[in-house]
Length: 229
Image (cartoon, rainbow, N blue to C red; front, side):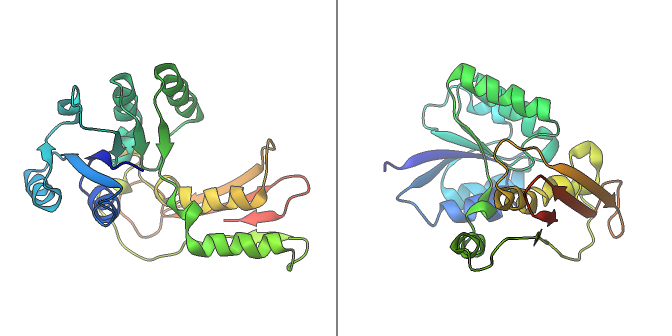
């Protein structure tokens, strides 16, 4: 496998602490060649950390020839417009979650990527987590017999007051944390072409802003276990 050149958009918790910290541990596979970050202090840190070119705006990447794919780790409400623009300018894109805010946006981006012959992927790392692979292995072994209920929980306690507390920025636990347990639940249900019936209850208890910090989902489908997320 050849070394792939990567551009990272955003140097917050995801862009630097998740993607950046991992990419520098596998230099035989990836090299960070560009970082885009509007905050000057973060750009300086990225330049020292990766030894790469740094930019204040992602449009400065247009025309670059040393990028194999772009990691879109910008704030959630920017995922769709920036990913769309990147694809139109010829880039392969790995986008952070949430992938989009509506099903129509998902369909539109997939169609655009296919039209331009670009690869479009979402960063669903929990799908490959060792603990989840072990759960799937145990279920596949048949030792548990017929599953009646699946329960998936992601719990934590914290107070937030940043952009992820606001719906206008795509904030809230369903969009930001939800993709992990929901993706795992759908995988375990093995739905195929089935569409589950969904009950969803959201509430806000501890955070500022208007976005939810509590989510309860119940998924059901014929001949499938009730799934509690």
